[in-house]
Length: 59
Image (cartoon, rainbow, N blue to C red; front, side):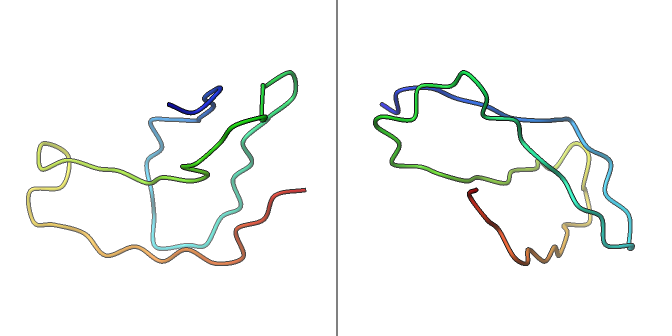
């Protein structure tokens, strides 16, 4: 497993682009395999969804 986890959410997405930041301060980043994940479920998206990600950065 990864050495730590971080996240935000739940987030209500809209058609407008918006920047989100996940604070990694104090996180143990010594062993991370899954660096980013997005998930949803049929309960909140019964018609499915299309989403776009752009410029994912680790700084």
